[in-house]
Structures are given as structure tokens and as C-alpha cells.
Length: 425
Image (cartoon, rainbow, N blue to C red; front, side, top):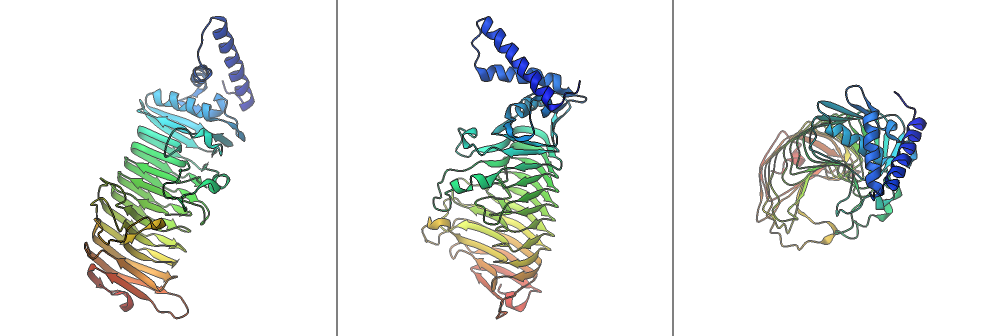
């Protein structure tokens, strides 16, 4: 039987009242949240449509942007995760506000979240308890997971960005990330929009075989720490046909990542496409096999960047990195390898980096730069970059003096077919 939103809410209310009355009459002492979970679970069984589809509005979710729909979404997840075969959670059109949601597996089947409406992240930070790095929507220990549709994950960041003190304190209290894939294998993120995250828009951690396509990520250029897609300790990650504009890195590739394919991405505003930062923590693992092709960067504060701490504590290697067919549109610092990265002046300038950078190719890089130094290879004197190739790099500075320059410090490699001003290898 199909219920309208109001009818579903009334059914849920009277069901909860009946269960609570029964429990009181028979001396049961269950906590309210235990009773509520049982009620939502029972309602989920009623709300299941053909083929294991769970519509959150049939579980009491109200799409007015104010009512807390966390319980309804979690009930749908528990039932879908327990079901065999293909299971679908439907977020219909509307604005559904929730707090933190840990969508935990393993699941018995393959779960899809069909995002036709919008989920809004509550700005009541007490709804994201108990973690040093809080998350809003975290998918954890799940295989064969899909989130797709034309809806939005709206972090409502403008309401809390003023609480972000990370620019002044590098050990600051972190705000919630929007979408976190944690130990997910064979995952797909397709078509959705991530808007105004409180912190990172998407974080991929300990995952394998993740495909991101047709996604839009959007936040103001001055929004703090709103990385578009960050990844670490993950392998076989594909990002395609995606548009990202943020206040931090459009894409950042952290330690322990290999087999990354980025193609057809438009980036800007933001800090560009970055590998790193690397070397801040002990026991970081290598980064290798990264391919960036047919991308456009517009008015970003950096272009293609590899960054590592000058006083790094971990011996990390970055290798087999290829940038090909990338267009720069008025970008600051279009090509930069920075082995002297030191945000917030927290480093000691010893010049003894333990991060090795080798076998990096920049091919067919064209367009315009907002800074005279189009190429900056700022490598360590004690651990020079090696195997760097620049082929057909033709990016021009558009300033008044038109003086395009390149800096290649402690970088070993070869330049071919580049503008003569850029052939510093």
C-alpha cells in the first residue's frame, strides 16, 4: 500500500505510541532509542516496495528541510543491507535534513542509494558525536555500493565555516566531511551534486575499485578546507567527466594510493589537482601509477602539484605519474613540484626531505598562467627529483611584461618540444 508523507508519519506515530504503551504496561525498560529503532525496523518491512526498494518517506521522513529524517534513512539502510540481491534506498524529491549517518556493512546484497531529492547536513554539530574526524554520510565496510541520481548532498557549510580554525591552528577541531567511503570495494558515485561541505566533500579511504562519474562538486573559492575529492590508502580509483569548484584542492591524492585515473575533469575555483601533502606522519605509504588526462583548470591557485614536507618524517616515494592534455586557463603556478611545502610555518627548514619524486611526465600542457613562473620544480638538494620529463609544455604568462619563466632546482630529466622559456631540464 502506498502512503503519502503525512499518512506515513501518522502511522509511524501511532505505532510508536502503541509499542511504548505496551512496553510500559508489561514492565519493559527499553531505552527510547531502542524502541524507536525497533519501530523503524518494523515500518521498513512494511515500506519495502517491489525488488527491495525502501522509500524513506514511507518511514516517516519529511522533506521540508527542517524535520530530522536521520532515523528514517538509517532504518532504510538496515533493511536494505540485510536484504539479498539488489536493494535500493529511495530519497525522493524534497529536502531531507539529517545528522551523522554511519551506513555500516557488510551487507548481504548490493545496495543502491537513489538520490532524486536532497539530503541536508544538520548544522547542529552535536549531531556528529564521538570522532576526531567526524563524518556526515559514511559508508563503511560495504561491497557493491552505488549512490546515483540528480539530487544533492548539501553540507550547509556556510552556517558553520566560521567555526573552522584550521588556518590558525593546524591541530584544529575538524568539521564533518560530507561523503566518506571507508573500506568500500566496487563502489560507484554517479550524477549527484555535492554542495557546500562543512569540510571535505568526499573522502575515499582504504577503498578499491571506485568509479566517480558525472559528479558536480561546488563551494565558494574562499570556503575553508572544502577539498573536492580526497583519497588515501586506496587503489583503482577512476574520476571521469566531473566538475569541481571548491576552496581547497579539487582532487587530492594522499599516501598509500595507487592506480588513479583522472580524466575529463574541470577544476576551478580551487587549489588544483594535488598529490600530497606527503611526509607529515610516520609510516606513510608510497603513491604510484597516477594518470591525469584531458582536464581543464580554470583560475585555480595551483595547477598540477606534488607537495611534500621539507622536514618529512616518513620515507615516501611518488612514482609513475603522468599528466597529459591538460589546459590551463589563467592558473597560478601551473606546474609545481614542491618538496619544501610547509603550511602554517610548522616545519623546520632543514632541507632533508625523505620524500622521493621520480618518473613524472608533463605532456601537452597548454594555456595561460597568472604567474610568471609557469614551471616550478623545487626539489630537495639531498634527494633530487629524477626521471622528470616535460614534453610540449606550452603555457604562457599573460601579465604586462609577458615574461614567462621556469625554475628547475635539483630536478633531473629532459625537456622536449617545450617553449624555450620553459625548457629548464
